[in-house]
Image (cartoon, protein in one colour):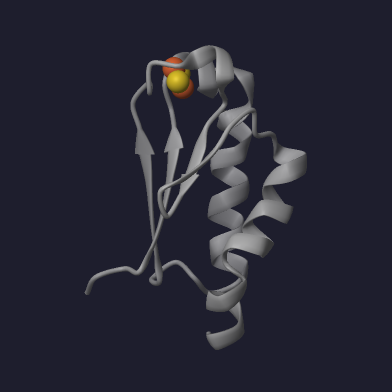
Length: 87
Ligand code: FES
């Protein structure tokens, strides 16, 4: 099955140590809580080569820079709103 939603998170050492370590867990929990595990393809990426603007999360090709756990839930609510409504 092809997922229509994709979340990619940079797990390069800079992004990972500056917050994505916790953001990964938050996204996993969020997808589980909203029963979206099988609707969203969630994967880790290697360093995107632009560490100073990180940590990065990419949702359906849209790049979010300097993300942290505090913004992430709000971003997910907004970006996945249609999916949550129909699931
Ligand atoms: S570690 Fe994320 S851009 Fe380099």
